[in-house]
Length: 347
Image (cartoon, rainbow, N blue to C red):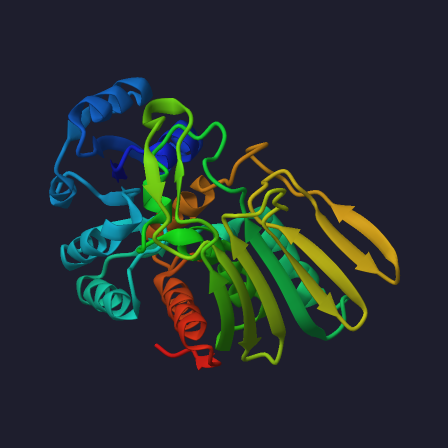
């Protein structure tokens, strides 16, 4: 398949474009698109992509079979809706829609045109999560009753990050949309849908100043709460807690601990080389998993699932219906934090 990549920011350079050779049997990037022509040409030259453009609508042309949408989060929905209406298969970085209403419109358009939608994050096809599902099906943990999850990072500015911090701290993004969706996808993918939420949130700083890289000296306003404590009730009867933050001085790994009557299991989410830890009767065993990368989340596994789904005529594992539920959960969490009430999840 002929693939167009829209967006050549940090995640494209770090996690997507360098890895595409792994799935060359499924598709080849023939076009990269971004607003900055110089950056787009540089990416095309570096990754040996033959065509460039500055207008994302170029991806609607018939010489493109599928699209990888890696644009900034606030514009995902607009682009995805246009792709769906045009019948263009697409994989979207998170979130695939700003809210439930937009997500439903995208899914309805795709149903009319027959295009395949894959929605990041790709965690449900990560090897640790696949193995965790096998452990749960085996029943060796006993009846599952609870889970706790974390998705945190250090206070900004983030050392070594050369991109623009500002989008992460805008009112439209923040840690809940950026980090929280990883454990939310795993919790709902492994344990069931969320039915009600409670939440508390706070903003730990009004702004910060970038101290290195091309944005050094820039003051970034923090326009979104950066500290979240969340309680979730699942339709399976399981209770879960979730901490999401951009303000933890010594952040732990993004992971989930699932507890049952007989044993427990710790599932790493973003480290592709990390083993599961399964504890039964006071004895812990590590379960290494096969992996392609030694560091950083392996987003390309989601693209692979997407392209295989198109080829095989099936729904992707990382499908839009699941992503829509997580969007609904995120909206309910935000409402719960504002109101101080327990909020049902509906969509």
